[in-house]
Length: 180
Image (cartoon, rainbow, N blue to C red; front, side, top):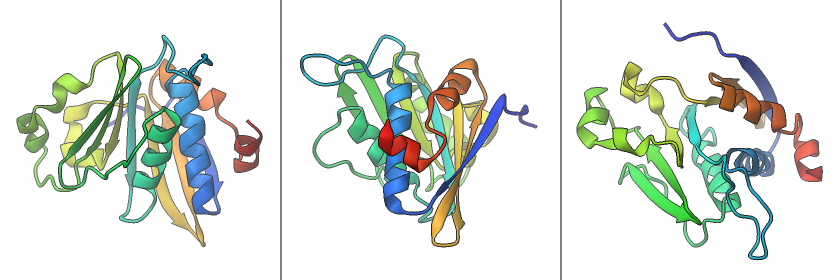
């Protein structure tokens, strides 16, 4: 049984732009974005693991794409649904986007050899983490996306001090994210 989260935050995301804004705001805090002469760059406290859960079409990949763009990934950002993993490097930060939708057994996560990707100097986004069962352990932050009328409800749960720091640094509404 998973431990209780340290903190939970629920945000209504009325439209796709709000999902993008949440992804961008989360990237700024998780990648510890620092201003530089070449634009914002990941800072020394960048790294961690974010799990994304929700039904098909709930916005997991959209949020991940907005996150990766904000971190400085340019060009086409493919969904890892078929390849299972898409990796990027920005400055000296590794970004890994994994999708376990196609897993039928938690042991497939072990067989795929992804355990080594979960290091401290990487930001790891995992869609469908529940398909790996209890083998992944707890993320810094779990984001659950659910349909809510025409939009989505994002429930963010922090399981570590790092995840708690991220939630506390996030705008509390999409309007706050547009200002920040």
